[in-house]
Length: 390
Image 1 (cartoon, rainbow, N blue to C red):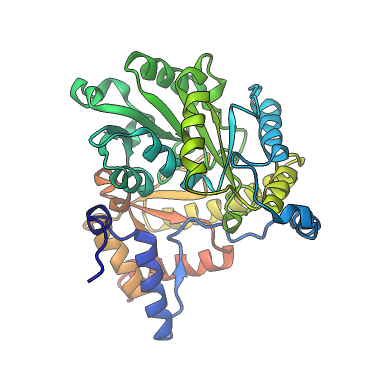
Image 2 (cartoon, rainbow, N blue to C red):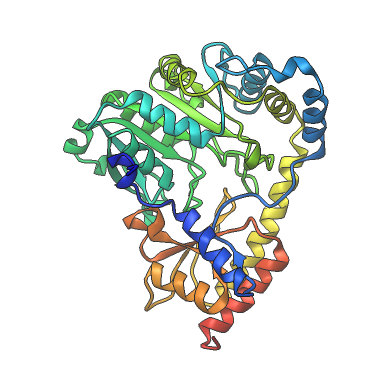
């Protein structure tokens, strides 16, 4: 008999893979399913990025292995982006590392830093992959709450001394998945002071840094003076450039953490396909007009869906970033119960708040990575179910 390791056996099934199976089962029955669960961009990759890929993929010299840390052009493009967008200076050789998506990079950094039993401070609610990666690294998840009343900013003073003593690392994520919460630079200044005081490696997941609305511009953790002494920031081209399937990201910041991750990765993979990296460099060096166009599309969907939820007396704070709506379940429902009702009676997939941690109870998440016509149809179905129409 072939058996999985105990860590894999005790790992819960990835929530969105469960949704995928449920969706396939319903579609097999002829049910028209609207999936507002997973946060995968539905917009196409901009043509100028595809053009660079096709140009580079025809060159035999690009068919070899990439350098382990990533090709120089992509790393320089990341550094240029940080200098242009945030005013942060980075050394492409020691402070930038290419990743096969930020999800991979975060999971591998956790494995490369933790010893068995080490704790990691993780936001609750938060991205489920954090907890999975900690579990697989034989670490211990230490949750700290994010509350709506505090704008989903971390409340550092509420973290107990016991939790701090057993923790080696702290994870932040802004603009936040799943809540859509955003912060100003003062929160990052507090986070850097806190990490130094308690000797924590500070990890910021900035996957949605460019998905913002109105005048809001998400700050970078590395804009804080001295942040590089304790911190790294992960970025992704998946959300803003619609390159989710291309699997390309980066990590920037503290040289020691990046070197540690680089050693781990060099024993596990050989970086991303060179033409994908070169296409990514072209994306980061662009004028970002495609990013602004994406955000206008998401804003249009956001406004429509917020109005629809308001008409159903469902409360949600309008986010300044991400393409998610974090809404309160109607009175009388749990997060799981409401989500089940929507899929069973309306053919709509929404994500129960408890998928992101205990503090997610009482909420559900809607992804706006669905065409506006389908969102409109979803809102009609939701309203009908809420009125008892089945």
